[in-house]
Length: 506
Image 1 (tube, rainbow, N blue to C red):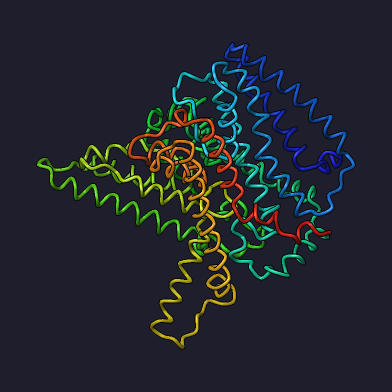
Image 2 (cartoon, one colour):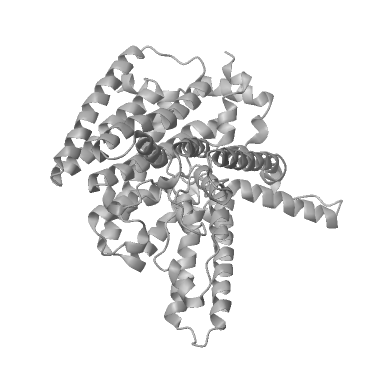
């Protein structure tokens, strides 16, 4: 066991990916889809042998710099592993291109959930299961690496509260990591801690959806998609789900794990004394969800008031629930659309503006969760800074309270949050420009860029004025979007950290 965990991070992930191919192979055997079974079983054999050969070649590898090794390994995982995932998928689908298969796997592994296979019958059930499994593994990877890699390096949103190690302190923090935290031991410890929680929550949601009347196969993929916030569905979303309201209600409860890391990692990174009631991310999420839901509901309510027939209580409740569920889903960057989302349009006669959902996806969920976007903690830091500046305009000599941590969030935390926000905005502009050069229209490129960088693939279908089909964009645009998904998943600051000269000096 020790020999395995001391292998390079990427090699271990490659082995896990190869073993995962047994799942769709076994499912295809039960479904008597022997072509798919053979493809994934041969893929398991091929990549297992390749993993063993690479493991033997790198068995004596010892990283010169732990921080650099972990970041490079994580970047390689999201860049190279989708190629491995795409090979059996490409062969099993048959009538597709490798670019489409690779784009699909990048989308799944980064928990984006964008798909080029719009027709529900295009893929077999085993291939849909592979999509959901890849997304589920990508979500688990984010859970583990966020705490074991990003937290000690003050990346991924942790820099908002721990900015004291910037500048020269960053070099000391990297040195400290080298001395006290072996990469294999740290990753192993958090993997063994978080995997049972992640798998247990998925199993609990799966059982709950089945009890609510959902088909077990569909319930499994939807439960994996909810925990990983990938939004992958074999039936085109929750609109066609058999469980209807009660299934959505159960999924809604599990969205909380994408709003705050304290729901599953309390005490792991020195936050044992804080609960959800004092968590600024969770409070910010409740305020945003409540405000946006109320605005959408009032908009439809006012629109319905002009109609001759009075609204029934059932229609009002359906419209309110559809807005609440969909807004929360896009804030967590899952992208599930409520079955009752269109009911509000029918009730009021007004189209629901997709700009609200784009804004929710841009904000994103909590730090160290599977959600993408700017993250709630950064939004909270910017809000507190703006609140303090407004207070100083009225009382220039006032002193901001809240303690040392609150002052750090309002000052250094807000500064680094603003830097990240500007980098995120520049990334959107750059992706839009490159997409426009491939022939994609400006409005379409804006929605696609936001959906890729926020890892909210269904945004292109739900939030756009007319649904955007990923299958209709050119191959160069798919390559650009795939790179944007990786950038959005790892975040710009983590990529910039690789160019820090201090991290390459040893």
